[in-house]
Length: 240
Image: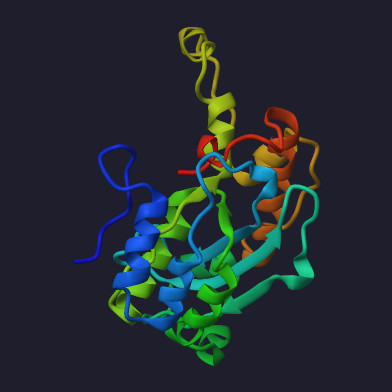
């Protein structure tokens, strides 16, 4: 039986989970993905190859909705490499709805010409292998990719992520001033990608293009690291 995502203490560590899945998986690309392993929890974040990942989807529920585009950009704390990144439009199993088109601006004709996600999964997994994934809002990329791999390959694809939205929430939504702000009715500041970037003086990009948003996420993480952390910060302090 394949295991679900590891939880702290009650379940195996990410390293243990990857080792088990490398033995259990039958899909070659997925087996290689797990066999590459994950960094040790004490490993400095500055030593780890990263990849920013972003999906545009038809909705927010991976049980009902589907991926329509994928953007990924490799980077580290010093350099972002957009030319080495990738972008795919994929055909969802059901026709696009008007609200979805208005949101991500991917049209019926584009998805009609696009391959189904099953056709590019091996390429995507190979590109992610050996990298730690960075996202903005972990409830999209990890569950949607797991749902797609499970539907196409019958096996799970679960992995640790660094969530720049969750990191931003540490400073904007938590901490000792949270109760005082609530008491005085001070509205919480947005932790959406564009608003978070603005607090670090990063430029405004057009949103809801998967590769552009992946690059924007990489830039935000670099800025968060420069302001709040150090390159020697253990990865266990950052990932989820």
